[in-house]
Length: 312
Image (tube, rainbow, N blue to C red; front, side, top):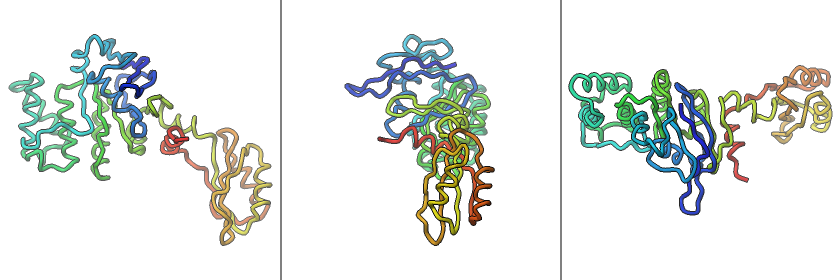
């Protein structure tokens, strides 16, 4: 549905985007991740035709952003990080104003507003002034604005920025509900949110795509094999290192905690994504060491993100 090809963007002598290539499938919820200054917002602004690329292009349903910007804008609903709301207007009046700009009138306008009030959970505040609303409700009004034209694609820039944990959960659930009917592209710094919400993530660092795929696949691909965390009591570190290092499949051992009160905590890395726990446990049992903790570490999106965006 969306095809990004060789996308570059320069601001003077600074290159914000460098040869981006990726596609977004119809009905997909895609998370655009990256540290501050990575190029996420620039990518979204080009996708929504607010900026022109320095080179390359984006096609939406075979329409090129350079040749058909108005056609593409009609297909996209865009919520920037700071929703451009008029604080002195009532929520209903504001939505009616947006509907009028979208060409809706009479019965269709009333029906569309009612639908969005229901979908975005605005019933309790629909007759309140926008400046009286919490940040979470303002984001909901912004979402309703972005969806007023019933767009095929919804682009959300940091939709949960500044929200409290309960509001984040509410917006996350709302995005998943919208994703049942729309193609959704959103950027976020909250990696657990992307992990819980997205079908796929694209990680950008310094204007370059460093990872693209489902979170589970990225964890396997960049996790560097399986890791088993082991905590022993009353064990000599030299003997432990020698014995566990000889286990088939073990690549290396990393000491996580100095010997303290008789405790020794180790991370045991395997050469491949294989389960080395049975062999490790046999060695520990035969040596007679007291085993306090023994578990296989689960690679998370946070770990992958840190690994791929870490500064040298």
